Image (cartoon, rainbow, N blue to C red; front, top):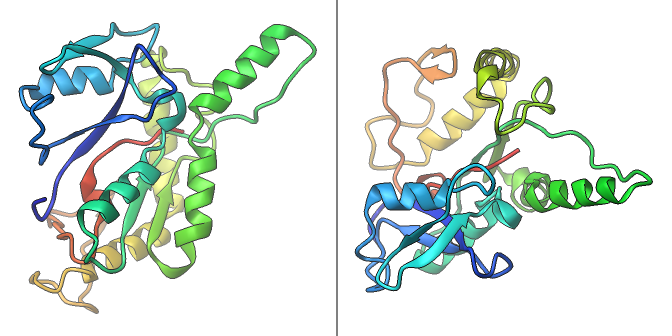
Length: 232
């Protein structure tokens, strides 16, 4: 595996209960080596009822997105990092959510039970909580997720982009201190870079870090560089 890589997840349409397939930039397996970037992008974003599934690879396996059980891919990416980089030390894990969802309640109807099961299957909250308990106390795990205003925005409501942007900007402003702590921690982990521990950070502007580009390497293991997206 190279010093850094990207990974996205998808699941087979024929068995959505099976472990996810990891499409990797460093993968050399014959079955997936012919996949193009656009095919992988289609596979990992093929949300059921919104986009068609896609057949890719040598065997033309049909894939959909990994929302069922893997909307938060961090646990899978951590396992991948440990498997590919067993000699590395501490990790730095950055998890970015898409907005905290509403509580999952069950009513008196069958439909409410079905909806609750659907929310549970696609929720990323459980994985986020487990990882925070496991890695959050020693500076290895950071989770940022808009905590109010987006719980009722669905995948199909593209016309609410301005509302999403407004709540995200407010969240960044309110959590600037925590974000700066993460950036400091993330930047200091690169012993080969030009920036050293204790150097002042560039100014934060609306969630971007000035004009300076941070490129931390996988030393120690940087799960954030192993790609993947996380859900609510």
